[in-house]
Length: 79
Image (cartoon, rainbow, N blue to C red; front, side):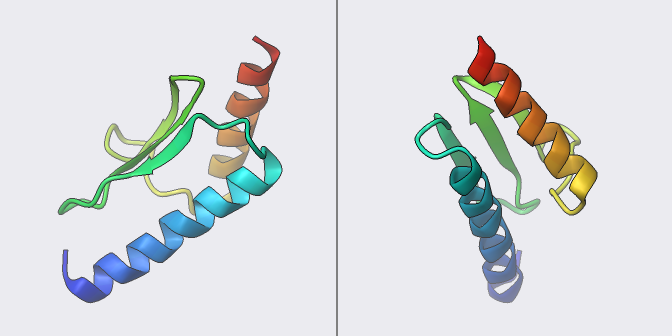
């Protein structure tokens, strides 16, 4: 991944993290970003994987994908 692509990718992942943390302050175990050739990252809540670009969920680039993550977080809050 070139330096320019890495910067754009990092900004998108950081924005995703910020949006999720603003909706669920102090409730996410973590949102991790791993730099690699594919720019993979994972979102976990209470240790449960709710989104992984690495395993095929892709980047969170639509309201549908964000909705899946938000619903998974809300479900984890109930447990």
